[in-house]
Image (cartoon, rainbow, N blue to C red; front, side, top):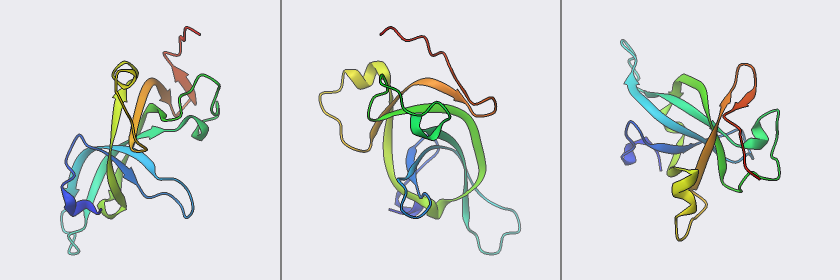
Length: 126
């Protein structure tokens, strides 16, 4: 896809991962070109969304297949060329009301604090 295909602030996007790994999911918070950067490369400030298996907790039985954890992890210098495609991230409630979903539709219901490495607001009725 590439950044030139219309991504904007607020979009959820798939971002390149290490070779052979599934893409990361991030939300674009800012789009910028560094002052004095003669290459004019576009960089992004992004908020990371982790898959449960990317945390110390790993995936547990109640995690949905397309579940993500919203995090307080931000990066301020992600090259826009890392963007692969736009995706959608819903709240759990709106996700459960969807008639159909594809591989680029995700949901989040918990927040993961990446510093103490713990899930917050994890009161789950099972």
